[in-house]
Amino acid sequence: MTTIPVRVADVVDEAEGIRSLRLVRPDGLPFGPHRAGAHVDVVGPTGVLRQYSLCGPPDDAASLLIAVKRERSSRGGSAALHEVAPGDELHIGAPRNLLGVDPEADRHVLVAGGIGVTPLLGMAHALHRAGADFTLHYFARSRSEAAFADLLETGFAGRVRLHLGVPRAGHAAVLGPVAAGLGPGAAVYTCGPEGFMDGVRAVFAPVVGDDRVHVERFTATEVDTTGDTAFTVALDTGEEFEVPADRSILEVLTDNGIEVFRSCEEGVCGSCVSGVVEGVPEHRDSCLSAADRAAGDQIALCVSRARTPRLVVELY
Image (cartoon, rainbow, N blue to C red; front, side, top):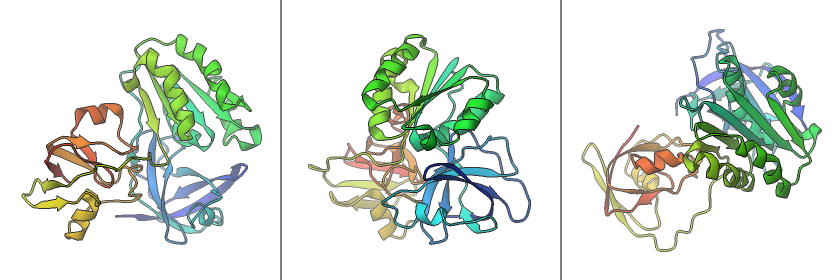
């Protein structure tokens, strides 16, 4: 993976256990453009690589803003980033998008749960500056645990609704009237815990359609691997390899000296997503959209398999 060095310019405690890091280039040059909803790979002081959403304005080329929640079960990623200080150096990859603003939508509803506000904050910046019709609903246990609460309430002209202390069972009652006011041209975006996002989809999909509810996941979806069988994977260069029932496409390609860009290896980050030239993929990832899956022309090599005996892929 290609990375560039960045310097930590500012560190701010945004909520309990959540801090933001503003990153700049040591050479003073601007960053390249990125689209709202993008994330970057971040290599911290311990060498652990994790993905973090870019939550600042996408048109701010001078710096990038990420927010890090300190996880109780951290294996050195988030814990280490909670120890960095201004002036420290990190390394980041190029921004990538698995979530983005739907250009065809006439109205946008953003629904965040906890730290899931981070990608949606970047999208709110872009929508606000474009003068788009949008609302952001943010669910958190308390104000002290709601990251960027002051910014959200003051910076987006009343388009943000904070829902504090609402139990999971009460979310549908809050969001139901919002969904009822939408037309088929609206788009919904959600990020947060898995059960939270399932609840958001259940409320909005019957109104706007499942393909217009866009989801950003941080954790992998559990998959039953019982009954997996072997298949052949071929590259568009002509090389072919057998993928056993208990190995992934990514593992087989790597074992055979094929270089594939990868990161989480859990189907979440989208690093290893590649093109499908021939065959039918069996999607098991948590990164491709419903429309991407239906198109059948992409596959996450780390977790997904083939429904056909042979699959031809094009490495990106």
